[in-house]
Image (cartoon, rainbow, N blue to C red; front, side, top):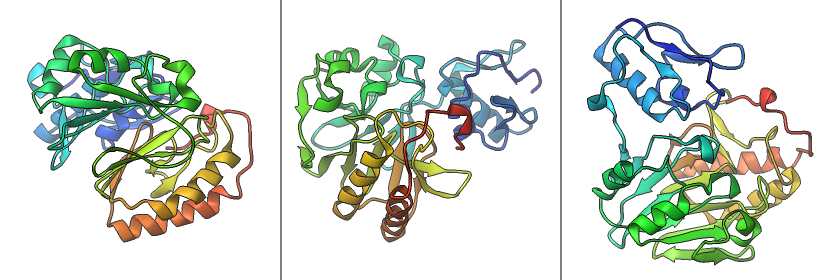
Length: 288
């Protein structure tokens, strides 16, 4: 189990570190392998990181990657899956698939390939492809057409995906399908949306995420494209309306906590966000 390293294509997107935090860390503004995998669990983790990495920067030239250790779609919870195979064209965003009796939901999209599309479809028919905001629209039309699904986006980001089938308008919550609600949450971008399913799963795009640094819910204060003040207002408006156990972010870590704890943490985030003011985008200042 030697020869593993992170090559110079790394963009410091954090994806690999989410899957192998004991093996891969941020060092000098990029991911770096802390040690070689030593156990079967280590090998499983480094393969998950490698198959999720959008630049394929987790490499082992001597042995290559074992296709049998590609874990995606990776089951996170009953009927909840991480799609993996993050795409450079979606800014390396995480994508998720939620299996439901009324039709499966794909939230944002992984890298496109017919083989991957077949793999996800084995979990059941996908009826809705939900885009959280403009940065994550790539491949949406391809997956929606492949599945005969409806493609959703908010009007605030419609110019990035004018071919969407369903346009969410205004600030009021919209029912996607029974038990699944779209909550417009402008701030990170003008058309950002979060999707809450069954009062359990909250797919947040880039609106907020679980931070390994703080051990709490956070917003990407240093990487907000529209207006952090609008994001604070959106959080304050939306927090009383939603309940969830899982936060499932496009960028940043995912986490499960009891719903009451998540509600308290979200209330704390609302308070912190209210004090934030616009600043220049600075990727280097962001802490995952």
